[in-house]
Image (cartoon, rainbow, N blue to C red; front, side):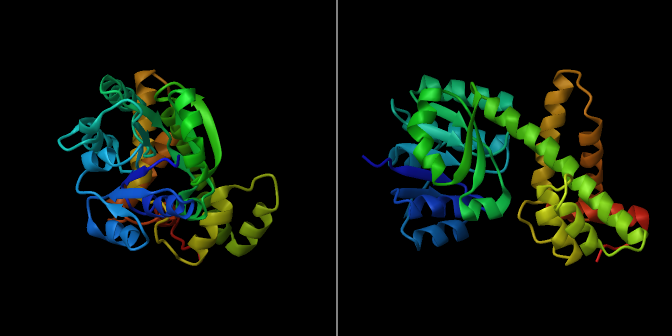
Length: 295
């Protein structure tokens, strides 16, 4: 029997992910805090629910893709939340990026109501969400993952079991540390090139073909040269992820000097009112320091 899927959170990432579930043939019920996402998916065949509880009542597996820890807590445990439809066999898959500790707390509360929870944050940006090629990092029960793997495969190409509840979120924070520092390295290279009188397009072409290539070089650098700062992933959301990583590190007295630097540079971008731009806007902080413009 085909699982009935619920999807909560229809933003830049959630909308194409939900669309891929529809394309894979899953019956889909959706809810979002604002109308545009609901209207878009309803127009393509999804059913609309009035609240997270109703989504859970009408489905077997509920996916959440919302901005932060408090948002997941609200849709899972708040008034009209998923927990109010608790019953054996119901699964919640949280694909947001949130605190590992909050994830474990939510999973424990849901388990009391008979609900299994997987934390399954993703990497790949809006392009990966649209193409269905996301990397998905999963924490929770291996048996629950086995049941839900076909659902995840409709949205992602690489599905990695990371360990018990919260482990998926921990691995995602590792991913964000790498991504943030790769972004900084790419931006510094482009600023250096312009300051030294070299065409930044030449740098992108050369580096892309060698050992120092990266997703940032291949995907973000060309946008910078075109002065395209539309978000595939917003600065404000990157900052949230880096904050989570730094908070987890602080609990362990773990220094993360590179991550801290990227976080501060993004804070400078936010201070200029650019938190809604894409993460390639990190270059703007470096341009201001260097007195150059990459183009």
